[in-house]
Amino acid sequence: MYYFHDQKGKVLYVGKAKNLKYRVRSHFTHNGAGRQRQEFLRNIYSITYQTCATELMAFILESIEIKRLWPPYNSSQKRFTPAFGLYCYEDRSGYQRLAIDKMKKNLVPIYTFNLLLEGHGLMRRLITQFELCPKLCHMQTDTAAPCTGMDEGSCQGACEHREPASDYNERVGQALEYLDQNLPTFAVVDEGNQSIEQSCILFEKGRFYGMGYLPSDCAIHDMDSLKGYLTRYPENDYIRGLVYQHVEKYPHKKVTWKVEA
Image: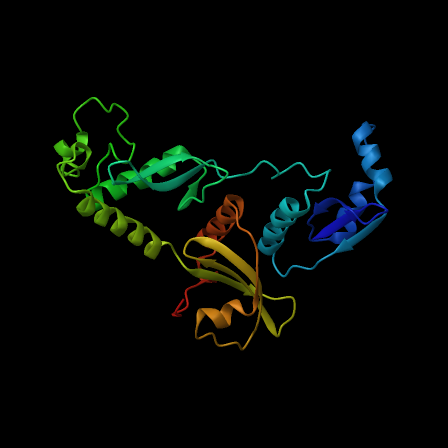
């Protein structure tokens, strides 16, 4: 990872490179005549860098730093935000209702999705498995029509108040508990910057927790011990996608510890 600073120390640009000397030099060669590029090059006063053991860690750190520092000459990832979230709320009749909706500034979602289709797929699975009502889950938009869940056997009449709210809410709670328990907790373990260490990227219940370096002979017995070696970072869907793609390509680097949260 490298950082271009102006004369006051403000970060102008964040980048990553396997060959730092070559990458930095490329910024100053083949200069275009564009006004913004010339202004960018004139404002560079100093360069700092941070070493990452793996390319995946560099990708993750770049995303974190762009969102943290908001450098004026970085354009990628500044608008990369999850588009939809899974929310739960209680209606006026006391029924707990699940909903997939656009991300809201003042509400924390249970889970996030880039695509509406992804969220709807999860919701349909929860409806079928826990016998939830499609209307109360906002999956049947025609509220005047008969509930499709009654025909399919998932709805027990909650949408018509034939099932007590307490009974329905219990199954909603079971669905959320199931979702929470089945979100994966794992780590991506790889080489470190030195032979005496190994890099570690931790996912806890489906969310990026952080990353850092462990001694190569480290024996982890509980989650708190593991977290003690790591730096916690904010997560986003870009990071989540990077890591899931990585473990799919390199499954041998994925480690699941038998640890207690």
